[in-house]
Length: 297
Length: 258
Ligand SMILES: Nc1ncnc2c1ncn2[C@@H]1O[C@H](COP(=O)(O)OP(=O)(O)O)[C@@H](O)[C@H]1O
Ligand SMILES: [Mg+2]
Image 1 (cartoon, rainbow over the protein chains, first blue to last red):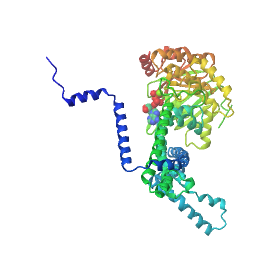
Image 2 (cartoon, each protein chain N blue to C red):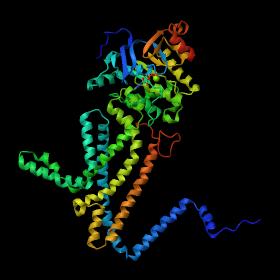
Image 3 (cartoon, rainbow over the protein chains, first blue to last red):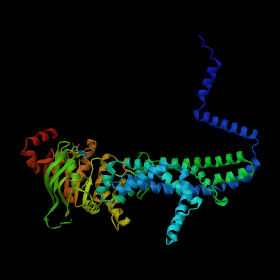
Image 4 (tube, protein in one colour):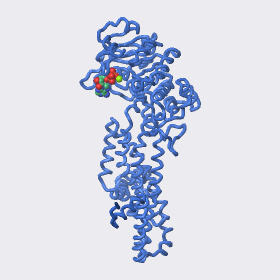
């Protein structure tokens, strides 16, 4: 008795089944890059121009990172306060936080940037016209540089979204934890700082990492406020050189690659941080993780 | 308010006319009791009879609906928590250690940090002193070698002993235990009860213990309190409660658990 002969298609399927899935997806990625490379080559991709200009565009990295870091720090602060306010019985705190979340989630980020950059100075001008006695120290903070306005707008906007993330994270901590802290006679702030927030962080950090990565990309919006050539972040720089030399393809491919590399790197660190935060929740100690002494976070 | 010696003598906890309602459900219906210096009182009774609620009213994890609680000279009632009231409650709690059925250890901290974190919150706390005392307490509950472990890597009995050390680290004047062994596998209850017994007999720590461990009660309790539907139905020294039960409800319950 002989086996029935396999068709060509069946033989191929069997051979394919022996190749690990990871290898196959890797090959697909390589294929995509080759296809794109070919496309760019046929479209006369100017590698020499890229070599000349990548340094200038990448020079905006420090401003991109600076804006994103400033924005995320502000957003985390606002989200912490906002979440505590949304969980408090104080009507003033609850009401102000409610207004904040509603407004900054309900309007476009780019509009908020222009409100800070162009609308605030007008408030200042009109106030000073009407009340010449107002000391300058009070009104000058309303004049923001484009970078400052953009950073603050990012922080306000993301802080509003993250308020909900933080609130959910705090609520995810078991009620018994707060009761144990109360029973030890901790103050509200001690309880939050030492017991509730470190545990909420486990729930908060992964989505916050996503927000940070999204924010790094949204820093590109700051370019619309017309940042000066020397303090421009990456996107503004690619716009400037791409337009000047009619090299839009090269300029935007380079800047896209830079943003992409940035997010890949941060995603990697985020994954490590998440593993570290799992310490105390898994029975097997992880390679990182396990801190000694100190009260967490 | 701190009333000090006015009601003085050796009463550490005094509960007067305590009522607690959750909405329409009246869980405590007029409870009066006192805990004296060095005394161990075991509270027992059916599930849902209000034992936990009573304990939680003593350190204001629940607000009494009516009546007052007096601990270590602080006498407080229920009602709206003003800033001043919150601070008084916090100060009262500094004198009261509590051990929960579910341990409620802080999972992100090691056993040692769990024990240290309470005292480290006090003004003027020195890391070195607090650490030394915490290690001493862990040694006392037999867990000196587990100081650097996170709670998840400890057995239930070990976790509960860390929780006892954590409460003791505040140097409380009275300890509250809410079914400290009910969440444990039977073979682990002994180690926790042994620690509690040594607290009572060696340190003469006044304790309010909700438990159904009748062996422990018989051996350690000075007084037993039978709780039924939100009131104290019967109380007395163990030999009387076990030997000369006065109330048929108590008898029925004891027959069921013994
Ligand atoms: N926070 C709460 N809200 C509503 N009902 C509660 C709450 N806590 C306890 N109860 C109710 O009060 C009753 C007594 O509860 P508890 O004091 O825990 O009893 P025990 O500890 O004696 O088993 C139960 O019926 C319980 O459902
Ligand atoms: Mg109970």
